[in-house]
Length: 258
Length: 332
Image (tube, rainbow over the protein chains, first blue to last red):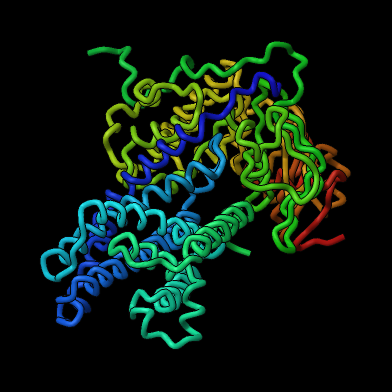
């Protein structure tokens, strides 16, 4: 009987399929899209535009846009995937989808791509505000490189979010995401430039995925030097979070009660 | 005025979702469950269950809520894995996606993605299968064409159930698993879905369905597996099961029938008696014979009432092989 069993469809086809319907499902709840667009823009208006020391300095304001952009991407990735996956697991449609002739990869890849697409939408108002209201300046090539780097940097955070989502119920996922996000953002220099860190924190900082991502991003946008360990640190965390996600997915059977 | 117009709720006819028919009658089982135990914490949901289903069978799993029916289906569909024992679907581990290319099952009606439109959900699910039924054709069959652009959140319960069964068939499966397919539906809607299931089976498909409605299993299944507390109590052809559970309940009032032993001695057709004052509740596989003999005996009685046993009573009957005597008012 094994010989007559048709083979499952290709991962590429299934990923496109899941991406299409995940995108549709996201777009049909407009508030989710709007929140993504507004949050980084508001943060920019409150924390960067009113400070002439930052807003009038081209390098400082470009760094501020980069840091806020990265924070927005981290936050969107962790919340959208951490909460999104945990919420999906509570819906009866999720176990149904898991009985389709497809492994976990297409759904996860579609999730990463869908999260990336909406993160990009969120960057648009941020970039516009940075351009109009501050001295931030980049060339078109630098801007494109920056956006590409942001997408690459978002991957470990999407994976971490999914790992949390597949491990925990919604009520536990919310505080865990917050506990992970804010310390990482602070230690990674997204709220305060790392030059002001004490030595011990500066050392820890360089081992965080947020700091690695920030420096790679700033390097792409301003041409400043990136510390040597940045790429290995980012890749290491990506592998670790991918392993966490795969482990949590395998362990999850959609059960919610004991 | 056309009398042949089937209308939107007409039963879907067989046809495009032709399952792969077994080539020979002596095929290996399409579903094989061998010595499977599955626990949830300290609860044993399935306890050393074995079950083989041949291609083309229509099997009903019957059991009260919490008996282990859904757990069994979740093992066969690869959602869970057993703590011990093996499960095979089309000869493969059901956790391997290749085993599931010819599997169809129904989502729970509450679980459809509310913001997607009906045709989008069909496209979405159908998109997973190598040879899916075209969406338009499937919607037509299930009388859902008019709802194609409606978001699933706006459908009625009956419409959602119809969509759920349509989704089970979209991949032209050789096996479908139906978990309580018509629970909560009105009679008309239920008949439509039953017909769809019969058509699928008539075209060669294998069906495994669970229900806690005796009526539903009776209407559809050829073979019945009775599960309770994680154990298979009975696994037999429908007729044989009906003989076993075909117990009727007779209620009557009589000042002259005596105690439990008197009744079972006098009327061998009676397998179980409950007495409360002058009210007798009797269970018998041959209620007609009992009533005939009761009338013939000339004993005084009134308020005679005969009806089929409920499922719980049938289960009790199935568990106790000996004629059982119990009484609320009159103990031995």
